[in-house]
Image (cartoon, rainbow, N blue to C red):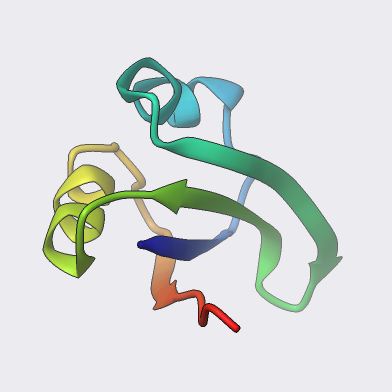
Length: 76
């Protein structure tokens, strides 16, 4: 299952935050979004077994003062 993880942070996120996802072989894509009112935003697209695994993998990443949203990607 694919999940889009949106991260909003008041300051730039270091590239190392996604390294654990790369090492686990679940990261499909990542990128930064245009800065907005909340500061810096970015996303990770991951491929995992289920939502529980997605949440657990993101919990392991240190994201202080960030707002994180995890949404399943619909398959059409």
